[in-house]
Length: 302
Ligand code: KIV
Image 1 (cartoon, rainbow, N blue to C red):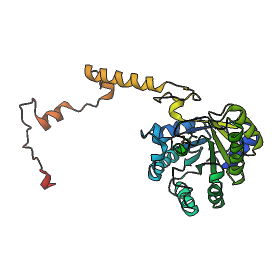
Image 2: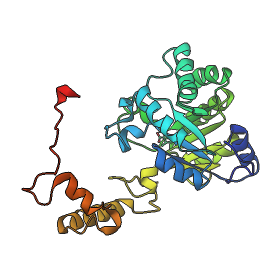
Image 3: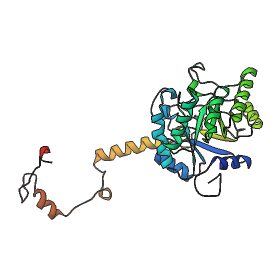
Image 4: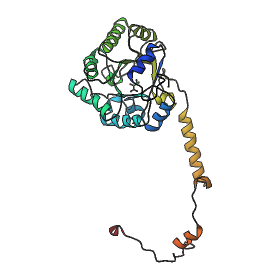
């Protein structure tokens, strides 16, 4: 476990300690029980049940389609699969920022029903009040600025690096400071030029978690399907550390070939019974009858 030597579930205090010690923080997205278990055993301290779920697991064209109940279903699975990682639930589109009461209620659902230990909220200055309201109830919040996928349509629809001009860079600094001031324990910087991300990191006293924001952040986050080589399309900032697409495809083809050849299942995957008992039960050959008359119950008799 990289963030703490103690056992049990990590807290935001452990993440703050890792940041204060100058140790970079590795965060990954997770969406289901078996992979969450593997990532937890691998010592990944922060797991984000991202609303990228919508695109990479559920096949939607955008994250704005993801509902609270869909998120909750996957948050619960990831929480069940983890013992150590701090699980952050991404608040989906319109589950926050509409009214302060609804934002707090919905954040609470992810902790109370989902079992997550924190939530993530997109937006800088525009979400600061919302973050403040949620934090005030005792729920840890991770911010997210730069490219914010839920605002995709409002941001022109096309995925773009944010903060390249004097004006937009200054706006991002204001966003970062507003999120920190609102009480967030960490902040995701998505698609921000390396130098700007490093400058924001220097000016903040909470960890920055970069994705497409260069190596100067306090930590990094990657979408798991990109990391594992499972995505149809991989963004420039992602690196595949495995090629599971090829591995799964090879496994599926090998399985189908063995089924067709009759070599799967083999003796190792098969259970046998006493031949005498079989004969007593169903007779010797296909045309034979069992020794005792068979009573076939009909549906209505059950
Ligand atoms: O939904 C998600 O996976 C995210 C990460 C890209 C940070 O928000």
